[in-house]
Image 1 (cartoon, rainbow, N blue to C red):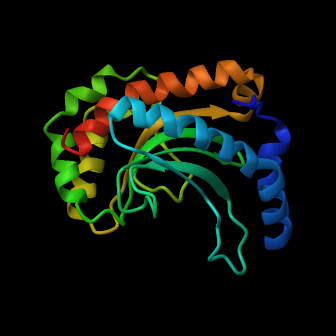
Image 2: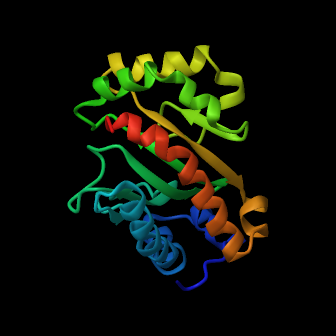
Length: 208
């Protein structure tokens, strides 16, 4: 795979004013990196899970006024989309890079998924203290897992189960400084280690 090195320019894209201007920068600067990651990690997930995975690079096609505040590549075992399924993501906000597994509100079976996680909360004890959780994929704000065990974690999973708009994300973040300090090989190792740790949670979500 062609080497991917994150730079300050990647994150500065989200400071560009104007929908067309920001989308142009996303398309030329960031999206090629997501496409490369999509090719690489599609093979990784297909091998690890035994299911055929497909990459989904965010197109932001429905936007007509507001420029996107974040962007990503998602991975799911369905060629036509990912939002209705538990999925993995690598993405950027203007402040950080994120690597997560997510269940968002479009998932029709999220109540059952939440129940599986609630019955296996000890899975989260296997994650190191630099992991974070969130209940909103449209917000950059997260809760450190080390602070969320067990009450906030349980509340977020209950909300995923009981509230139509409930969501759940867990993974790791890198600040701009951390992301740009990593070599291409170091970043791939970090991403693989993160996904390796998240796979048991994904398998529980999908009932494997």
